[in-house]
Amino acid sequence: MISIIAFIIYPVMTLLLFFVPDVSSGSHIVEEVLQLEGRVPNLFIAVRPFLVFFAKLLLPLPPTITISILSGIMYIASIILSYYITKLLYGEKTAYIYPMLWLPNAYLMLFAFAPNADVPGLFVALLVMYLVIRHIYKSGKSDHATVYVMLLGFLSGALTLIRENVVSAILGAFFLLVTKEKWTKAIIYLVSALIIPSIWQLYVIFVHNISYLTFVDISVNNAIQYGYHPFKIIRYFIYGVGPLPLFCLLMGLLSDRDRTRQIVNHFFLIPAIALALGWPGIFEPRVALIALHALIPTASYGFLVLSNALTNHVVYGKRLGKLLLIAIYLVHVTFNIWMAYTNNKQHFSPLWRFF
Image (cartoon, rainbow, N blue to C red; front, side):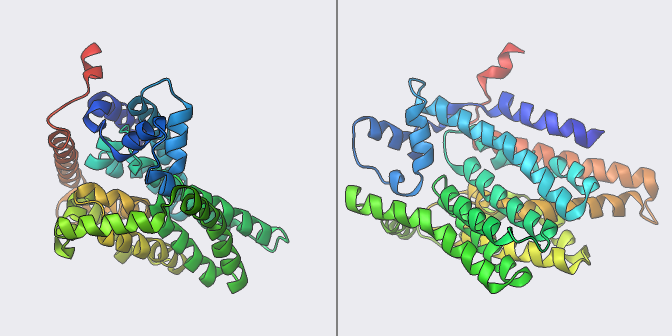
């Protein structure tokens, strides 16, 4: 019952506490929409055109509000997708417990309704992950399976135009298809996923004289300017994920005895974490959002393992074990709300004042 309530409480709390679009009004996406108004060729048309064009088409609302609304819709959709992915891999019990661990995440709360591409990127990575895992778990000998994989590839490639870091989910899907399907299906999926982004890149190169390589070059220059160091990014990543989810991730990986599930988790985890740690353009804990889609199912299972271990401990007993679990959880929630507040320029949303 508590987990079901969490599906409602945390999104509402996130909206009431951290819906402050003006705090992020200078985000890159917002700037690009404003530049598009003046017909200035802009970099994000090369790598994230869907959000830019959506915001442009949905004007006359200010782009900060428009992109915040889009981000919020995708945040809610991400909650639903995370539930179904976790249920598909670990069953209904783990799926119901997942929001208690993840929805209080500081940077997920902070950017859920923010005018940038972080949460939309999480949503599209979750969508790719869900569709491929569902195909692996549900597919049989159907003659239409190859066609489905091709269509899935086209969709995955198109989704990179919302945010480019979805490529880690595409790589995970490719390696999973190599292991669980024929090589031909995996190659069909990868080639199909490359078609739409490639066509778009050719367009922006010839028309705007910019490309994804321009974006990479600028990001690498920023990394050099800000002094990229792997240990610094690892520290940001730990802050962004949080101590309890990282511990639960470890428990989930070590406790699971299902080989197929472990293969699925590793193929999505490794590219996602590698991309987050190597991403050259973000020097703050929200870099963890790049890998969050791959962490959610396994860490949720680890949280269930931790809960069962504490509430059935041979020394603590059920009552003391539950008290310890509640104490750990309250520290987790309080820490994340404090982190979100301090990283929001000590602002809560003005919306809460009406209640």
